[in-house]
Image (cartoon, rainbow over all chains, first blue to last red; front, side, top):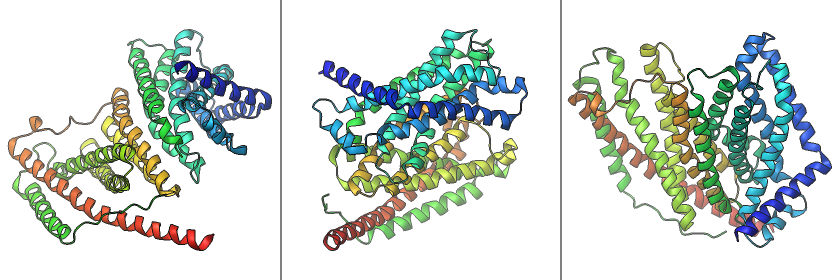
Amino acid sequence: MNGSLALRTWAILWKDMLVELRTKQSFSAMVFFAALVLFLFGFAIGPDPATLSRLGGGLLWIAIAFTGMLSLGRTFQSEEVAGGLDGLRMYPGEIRAIYLGKLLANFVLLILLEIVLVPVAAVLLQLEPWGRFPLFVGITLLGTFGFSVIGTFYASLTQHLRARELMLPLLLFPALVPVFLGAVNATTLALAGDPLDRIGGWVRLLISFDVIFFVVCVWIYPLVLEE
Amino acid sequence: MTTTELPRFKRGRAPLLGLVTLIILVAGAMAGLLAVPADALQGEVQRLMYVHVPAAWLAMLAFFVVFVMSVLYLIQRDPRWDLIAVSSAEIGIVFTALTLVLGSLWGKPTWGVWWTWDPRLTTTAIMLMIYVGYLVVRSFAEDPEKRARWSAIIGIVGFVDVPIVYLSVLWWRTLHQPPSSPRSMAGEFVYVLLLNVAAFTFLYAYLMVRRYRLAVAERQLEELRLSREDRGGR
């Protein structure tokens, strides 16, 4: 059973990645949107390098969150064509694989986005992520995973609602407050140095959030897709 | 979709409960305003505590009920649990907003600002947003069964989230005075506060009875509309 869950999850992840690879629609749009958000921050805050680099951690995560929000909405909408979701649901085995596959697809897509976005942000916002790079990467992975866990869950829940483009951020952003606070503070400390050694607390918060909501979301996901 | 028999409350109970609630509320207000002296440091404004703390307590109680009813609904699929949950969520939202407004009124003279990024204040505001999301989802879902199921899931996830939000904001900043607890207050203040907490608990029960009846009526009206559409439309 577990083997089949992993296999089904992998199949859905592979399918979504393949669709993305063939069309390249959302990824290129996401990259440009994220870069655009960074430019808007520059215009809003002004070109002072000290200010930009001090706010860099927060700006980076707002850009990731806004861009991620746009791609989350597409996750399940893409299955509406020709009854895609019904097809997925009819395959035998655990329905949770749909959630896990979509969650991993969102996670991978966001990581790919960040691989492009972080160097751009480093240049535009005068950030120095390279000093403590492994720590920076770890924080980014944890934050992105937490975002994907809740984001994929609520994207699936709001899929059939009227005004879902409005509902997804309305549900998602309040729920994400711990991830956002943890990721922004840990990233800022990783970028600017951490003389009081406070980064550990934020990393533990991110890990706790990721574990708790991963368990809760995986556990109750079958109720979301019930017909 | 199944048309479930939706129960009604017996007539006559609610006005009595309302009367008892009113008496305790008036007693609590008079005790808070007249029976106890003003705070030595903060002066008269500290009397806001006698409504601020009970309002916050009522909001927490209401959201806890939403959580329990959401779990019960998902297990038993009885529409009554859903209707209790939405009634409680609405009352909870009203009193969360009241808590924020009262806290703001209290904060201005004591802290010097209307708003501060204090953990409990911030968490309360985020909690308000989480449950507003719960209500808005309901208004955008047409099928009663799906609406109940989806909002129950949000009721559970949101309730799990609130303590984590609190913890995260607590690490972020702190300025709020320690929670008003029996240990931090003299005896007579405690009794007056407890009286007001009791009054607000009665108020919650009374509002719940009223709101639940309304929810049942709304739901029955909806069933009627849906069955008419089924007959007339196709």
